[in-house]
Amino acid sequence: MVYYNFKKHKEFFYLDLIVYLIPISIILGNLIINILSVICLFIYFTLIFKGKILYKNYKNYFNVFYALMIFFLVNLALSSNFQLSLVSLLGFIRYYFLFLAILFCLNEIKDFKNIFSKIIFILVLFVTIDVSIQHIFSIDLFGNEITGSHGRRLSGPFGDEGVAGSFISKLFFLSCIYLYSNNLGKKLLFSIIIISVVVVILTNERSASIMFLSGALIFFLFYNNNFFYKFTLFSFAILSIVILFNLNNNLKSHFIEIPVKFFKDNHHKAHFLASYEIFKDNKVFGSGIKTFRYICNEDKYSKINTKYASNRCATHPHNIYLEILSETGLLGFSIIILVNFYILFFLIFNFFKKNNSNYEILLLFSSFFILFWPLQTTGAFFSTWNGIFYWIFFSYFFYFKRINN
Image (cartoon, rainbow, N blue to C red; front, top):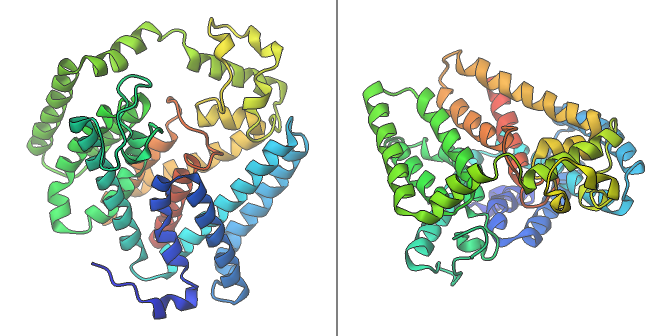
């Protein structure tokens, strides 16, 4: 149990205490996320004004922010829907400084990383247990029943929102940073991974399940353990999944039969094609943040090569790279590609240096893969709920980069 010393943390205006609540707010909903992230922003700037945060230590991050603002202001001026893009730009600013607030806490506040990672682990474990209870009893701890959308969708504490699998998969490997910090956690790590993979599959979230299983496989293959132990666990995991699909016709239909039947043409293809056509009309600066939902209705985009053209519209293109490409153009797309390649090469290079942080690099890489692998359907990068996972990851990565340098 961790004792929170209010007197000691008063000098930081309890910024760390507010940040500790951020993972919890992901379960509570967008309103709480927005309130807490705005509070973090105001505290962060107060600390800069009071001299508690040295501007020079974070000058490079502010310079990046200034450059991004120049680009986004041009993007806003050219946006096909100024009001939508303005609201989203304010949301981006809020999250950028939430990222800096988390990074500051990781860098400057003792034990913050362990406590924050522990909170994430407890929440991931809680959602996993709640979903399991919902699967067994058809109702979770909060009285939420199984939803009928997209098959037998398990949502756990998220109620009508079928995102429990996404929550687990996107935070799991970051939460393992805490798990790996004690000997018992190391021994239970692979067992927890296998159980979590099975639970995510049971949520019936196809993309989250595939990405989590793939991320787990990457971690499993490169984790430093003896071959026989890994082979035994891998065989057990595959056998468990095969049995699960054979015993559950709903999962078999949702994960195998439907994807095979609609592989060549489906509503996601319509979203992808529409976003690409929007990009072709707005190559440099894009159509404006969050405008896909607005501009996709134009008649000229009904001519895309799919029988699902009438279903081309959604709140976002369901792929963050196509979202960024269509809404921010080549310039915005180049930024995210450069950042991701930098992260990718840094993690790979440092992993093969065989230093003492290999396990943490592997956890970060698995998390990075799940979040940024391009060949998947995703939530929106510029959204409140889905977007927060990317910024939490960025905070961990740039903290890790600093301590390794």
